[in-house]
Length: 127
Image (cartoon, rainbow, N blue to C red; front, side, top):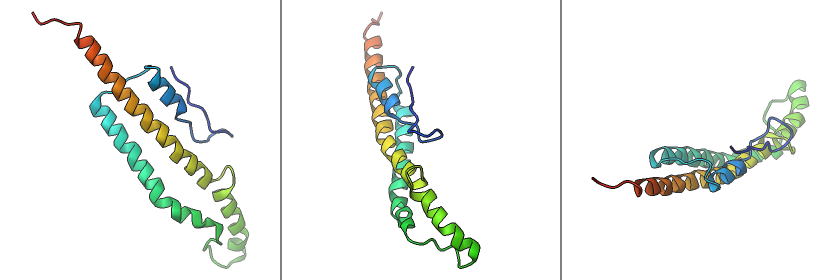
């Protein structure tokens, strides 16, 4: 069993360090087919974050919400939601960092699967 830690504040980005620790301890294994699919998904998510982070980091400028009184009241709030320590951009950066641990965990779990499969196969004799 492994523990996935909340990044803080409840409802945050789960930490993949628990998954990585579980893989290193041999708590689970992943075959090559499943591992490759998971790694592709992890890498796709990382690429999406990387591709969009530059656009999201421009939120320190006034958001183009219009010029109405309501829009002018919302602009500072929206910037805060995006950039404060509990904000979207902050959480997205934490998520991106967690993908490094997720990739390491799956890679290790695939290695463990190969080792376990070799060990088990080695106990059988051809008759």
